[in-house]
Length: 211
Ligand code: ADP
Ligand code: MG
Ligand code: MG
Image (cartoon, rainbow, N blue to C red; front, top):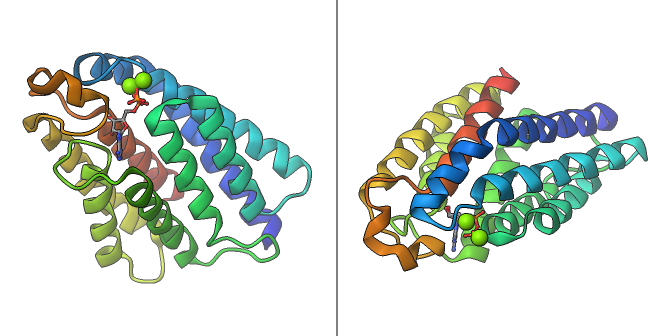
């Protein structure tokens, strides 16, 4: 039902907070080479803000849709930075597939991921090959669509996360044209895009969490 769905969504945001805290130093290290060094901090602040806002909404009795709208606003505000705005927009877009009054179906989480990625593409305007999180998100979405049978979303998410991890690692081979790392040019060669790495880690953890 709607309460159980809202609680599950809040659990996922708690998971994201824990994973971002765990990965903060490593994401910062990568962004130091390929960007400006603040990606770990941005993801940690953003996910913490989102998880807190989700808990507060849940305590007020809000449904999953409202909870995700508040979490998206909080992620953008708490994180600052490019990835914060994109993750915030992704959560807000994901909110649109949830209802405040009904529970979720197996397809809901798949549709939410699809809408979230669409928002990142629209707002950021990056294309595959620009060395951004889009390089991981696009193959993730394509694999998810193929792998999802209409039943267990976790299996499809895990398979898609594998594609995202591979694609994120492959961004080490390209120099950046967009985002902060563009100003560093060749210096990012050999280092993967931090936003692609954090995306692939979060989707892997989501798949494991739902399994
Ligand atoms: P900032 O670049 O403002 O310091 P972060 O360090 O938190 O923000 O995030 C950097 C990440 O944001 C990059 O590694 C990249 O994956 C992602 N990014 C930057 N610009 C774009 C864009 N236009 N579209 C999609 N993702 C982007
Ligand atoms: Mg940065
Ligand atoms: Mg920055």
